[in-house]
Length: 264
Image (cartoon, rainbow, N blue to C red; front, side, top):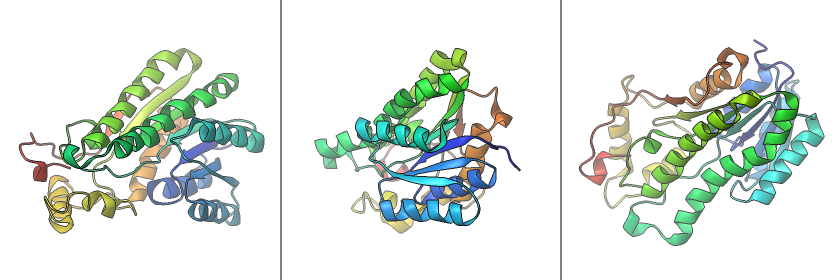
């Protein structure tokens, strides 16, 4: 308990799923939490739940694909709590589908939501973390960021970019006592999960694709949001104070792809 006592954590995409679970867990561990989401109702609800439970939280509505929003996120976090010790860029969207089905707008949105959220969110937090004597940065990547995904190449590109970005931060700002890592989950049962499963229904049905995912997980079930939140808590806490530049991979069988229906 109290692994984040007196720390301030900013979590994007914390209106639901893994982010919401983590926001509540981080609060129980002593952190003041900035709940960040595009969905105002969902994000405010999570912040309200934390405050009603005796914690401290504010909600900031942010489009992580816009630098101005990310700067405002940082400004409001500092105004409310005076510092930020942990930044988990967890917000994301499902892949647009195969190359032949992906528009320029969908491609740009993938890179914007995922990569701008990580890059510019950290850019505006950096001077505050340096002033505080350090901090922890965490990105939600994916197993699809570690292997090619013909079912959604734009998603793979965006998530792999977050892996490299974390390692760039780890190498470039270790001297500032700033750590950066990524979590690369396999199949997590969140509200976003159906949108992943429905992106190529003409190639493979959502039911069959879900079963294929489950078969590739050694434990034989989907990962729960709370389990990812536990991993995030460890990486953002002082328990991981010498861990930086790491890609934390959910154990899943990664086979050599030959056809789109065999890969996430």
